[in-house]
Image (cartoon, rainbow, N blue to C red; front, side, top):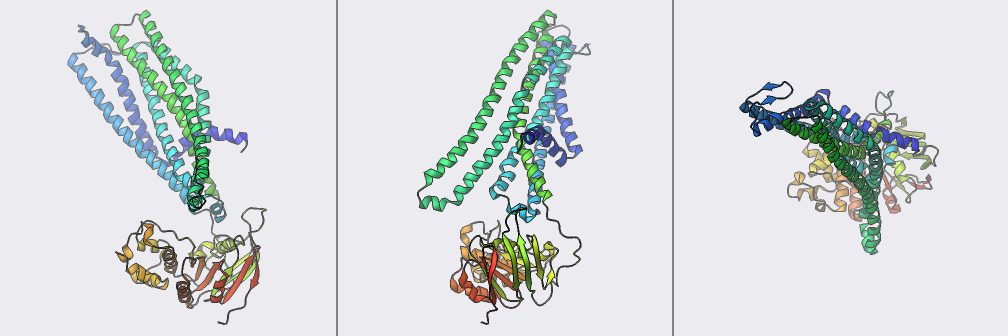
Length: 577
């Protein structure tokens, strides 16, 4: 990233923070919170001016005068006014805190869910290029920091209003002295601008450090078996300690600077208050007014110190909001857009006979100008039969699966169904069932894990679910579970690796797919179970494509192909057996 771009992000960090507030909150909501916070500030300022008659009562002065209006007032009425102001301020403060927290949660959830929605609907090339742990951190750690930034922004507004309330009270009580105090606050703000910019840079550096530490943690957890087998725990811990130390250094550097600013402001505030009192004395301000003026000035200086500290904190946290926005916007720019000229899916998705599949001259590149991941692939997948594609790691099997599933449109060549080109990939995917090697168990019951990927609008019942489980060879296992279909699978130890693969297979079968794609989907099954499952699947009701590195599975296929060096180098004739 160029320095210009970097400075641009620094300049727009706080603007991005204000932008997300405007995006996810309505004007009436913002106006309501602002009105409550203004009421708190006004009531606080009124309370400060009421210190004058309170002090007059305490010193037993004969005439109690209400400031500003210079009207005599009785002691009971003074007490009543003070109590009323305190109650109003407390209620407004509580209500404002609740409303501000509601907006913070609303904004954070909106930002998080919009980002996830954009990723889910993004072009597959964009998704494949993302690191999973970076996505997780973007919607967890960075969003937490973004939520904190929104909360701090609310505190900045409160500090501004409270400072203005104190300044107004001070000016009303002693115009010259109050104006002088307000001028001193302005000087404090100008003197701390550099520290705000440093806080923003620190926030950007911390976001990068969080991603690096997340990478180290993810890689450590993924390699635990290897780490223990090689007794290499200390080597990995050194990596973790180094990344943690880098992040700690950034945070401590920010804390030292911000604490130094607070220290300087505290000293400056005390000195300013003393100067103000001396000036007020020379102006022959009365004792009661002097007490109220001291309190108003102290409140104003405290609010100013809080304002400058929270502004630093907001600048430190704002880069997380900018990072979240950039990620979501990039995903939206890369959204998958279905073709508009496709009026119906290729073939009839409700027909009785399964489809055939053809690939003609298919080449795919993940990056423009890069080397093709698969090159000039021609393949015929016969209808209603099993086709097996084998090949070593890195040969391009996963890319070929993505093309067949309708995730990746070929850069060259065509995907055809029954020799009709597929032009609407989303509609084609509604006819496909996919079973990966690693099956994800979602929180919930067996039923929940089976039905979440059913085609929208498809009708099914318990009989359909049991039929899919039986066809996948898992029906008897589920019947033995404590609550059958309603057994909670939150504890992953309930199902073995092979049982989880068969659950994924039943999930795909419940879609009633025309094409079933198995990506190493039987690798955890024993030989006998694998043979039985494959024989049940190839019953003429669907076309089956099995992608694997195990050559021995070719014996089950009506047709098989071998991928090597990103090309199909062998294509067998249909197996007569």
